[in-house]
Length: 543
Image 1 (spheres, rainbow, N blue to C red):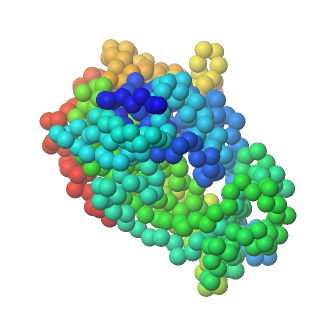
Image 2 (cartoon, rainbow, N blue to C red; image 1 turned 90 degrees about the vertical axis):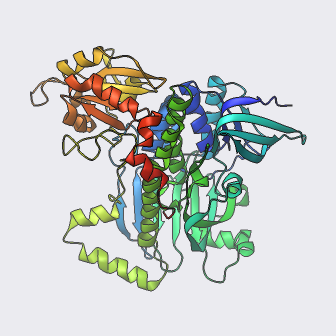
Image 3 (cartoon, rainbow, N blue to C red; image 1 turned 30 degrees about the vertical axis):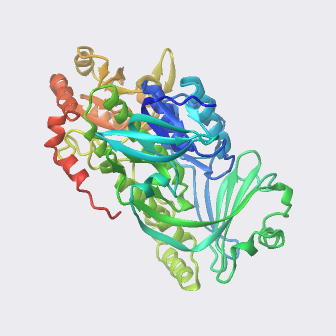
C-alpha cells in the first residue's frame, strides 16, 4: 500500500513525458513533490516518436543526455514525394545549434523508463501509480488534492502547487471549466507502428498524394511508423482490420500482424486551453495545448512547458519569489506554443494536400519559386519555424535592446567550449540554475564580486576567454561556430535563466545594480506594478 505524504511542495498529476520531466527538474532544483498517475503502471505505448533539440537540452539538465539521448537515432532529414514517387523537396538534418540534433527518433516507452529510473535516483519513492485524483480544491491559496488508491481508500495531500500533466482530456482542466479553443481536423488518421521494417533509411517520408496522404517515419530498433489519412466513407471499425492494413502497406512492406506494435485511429487537433493557470493550479503539455503531428512538436511542447515552469516553482518555494511570477508561464509560453501549432498546420496543409485543387496549388507554387531557391528553401525546409524566443516575460529591457542582435529573451546557443583541457557542451558548465557568462577581463572581474546564488537556485560563473575573434589564432569560438551569437555580448555580463534563455545583459560596472533589478521582478511589490504581468493576467482567452 503506497504511503502518500500529507503535505508536499508540489503535486504533479500525470506520469507521461511532461510530468516525469518536470518532476526530474524539480528534483534537480531541490524541490519536494509527488507524481500521481491514475494508470496501474506505465502505459508502454509508442505515442511520441520525435525528440527535438530543445527537448534534449531540457533532459540534459538532469543528466539524461548521456544515459538516454546519446543512444537515440538522429534524423537525417525529410523527403516529400508526389504520387509518382518523385522527390519534390528534401530537407537535411540542419545545424546542432542547441547542442543536439534537431530531431531524434525515439521509442516513447524507453524514454519514459529512462525518466522514471532517473527520478528514482534523484527522489526515491515519489511516483505513485494507481492513484486517481478525484478532486483538487483550493482553500486560502493552499491546494488540497484528493486521491483514491488502488484499494479504494481516500487520501488528502496539501500542497503549494498542482501541475496538471494529465493529457489532452485533462480531468483537472475540465473540473476547472477551462475550455479549449481551436480546431479539430475533419480527417482521421490510421497510425501503425511496425517492427522489423525493411526500410533502413533515417528520412521521414511524406507522400503528398491527392488520393491518400501518407507519412513514413523511422523508429528505433529497426521499426517504422506509418500514418494513413482516412478517406470519406471509411469507418474506424473497418480500417484496422488486418486485410485493410495489408492493402495499405503493400507499397511499403508485407503485412504481418505479429510485427505490429500498435494500430489505432487518431483524430488530430490544433487546440489550446483558454488559460494555463487557475490559482495554484497550472496546465502543462497536452492539458494546455494539442498539436497536429506533422512537425513532431506535441511532446516537445510539453517539455518546454516543464522547463519554463519548474525553475519558477523553485524560485517561489525556495527563493521567496511571489506566486505571481507564475503568471509569466502563460505570458511566455502561450504564443510560442500556438505558433508551433500553426507551423504544424501549415506543414500539413502544404505537404499533405487532401484534394486535387490543393495539389495543383502546391505544384504551381513550387514551379513559381523555381528561380528563387532561397525563398523555396525557406518554405520547403520550414525555416519559418519560430526561434525559441520570448517577446515578454521575466526579462530586463526586452523593449530597449542594447544591440540589434541582442540575445536577451532568446534561448542561447549551446556550443562546445573548453573545459579541463578538453571541450564540453556549454550547459555542462552552466549547471542547473542561473549562470553569468563573461568573455572579457572586465566582465569577468565584475562577476567575481557577486554571489553564487539567485532566488534559491545556484548561479554559476562561466568565463569564455575568446581572445581576439578576428585573429588567426585558436580560440574557444573556433571549436564550434554556433557560438558566434554569444559574441554580441562579448563586453558584457550575460545573465542566463535556468531554462537557458538570456534574462538580461549588463555592462560590467552595472552588474550589481542590474542583478538587484532582476531580483526585484520576483517581489510582490514590483510584480503588482509590472505591466508585463498585468498583460499576462489580462491575456485574451483566444489562441
